[in-house]
Length: 364
Image (cartoon, rainbow, N blue to C red; front, side):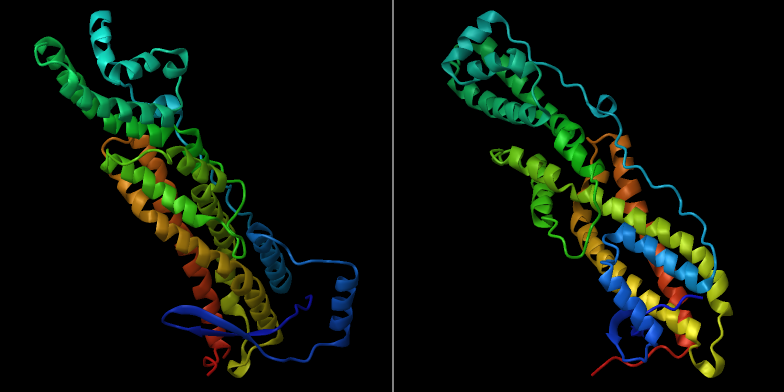
């Protein structure tokens, strides 16, 4: 069995879980010091990133216990349903030439002309939403300008206005479900959450709140819509949160099944930790407490900040069931599975450390 280094003492509260780690001095052998110096001279570094940390944690535990852990489950894919499935059709507003000329006395005529251009027919979802919002407002304004002596056109404007009001929730749903920026933010985060990285979370949270708000408040200004979508695309925080929770959960689940068989068999004569248990304690403290748990704390923070938006979207009648199922799978079920893996892992170690009298009182 290979010796592990950097002993620590773990303080935990049995009711609330792991709380704090603090160091205590311990004699290290000359061979261990030589090994450490050799690592420093050779330029070796600790793993960087939660995925590397989890893999190194697994390797250290395997060496100390002299066991082979099963391979983790396959990584979960964050695959959104196709745009073709999620896009809801929107009925076009047809204006005959005679009515079009009469609309020139208000801005509505200019908007209708813009929609008939090649660019207008292939507009980005956000631009389409902005256009349709302007159109809705101008329909209301134009109905006040058109001469009441033209009851036919006045009635037509009222019908168009009612139709566009009914279409607005559909247009919002298309914006949420098919915008390239939001789809990237939900499914294409390449990196993981790290405790020391600036994730620009506030920009993402503000953007998600903005997108929810423009459905509930039609009069809200849309001048920053493109900027809000860009913030989501740049940070891709939801996808990174979900990718991180899956990585931790799948690695811990593979560890937990084996640790549950081997930890209860470890000897603690007279409630004193054996050398093997002490080394395991060091590995747990060094990797899980110092490296993985801070990532989990940040992940939890982001999850609960974004949760209100996910809950509203999961119950929104205008969003597609497949889109809502995607949110439920990753923002709800995936997070619950991650929490369960963390809890099971901590319980295994708490049970061992309590049995081996590795549970000092908290420092004053």
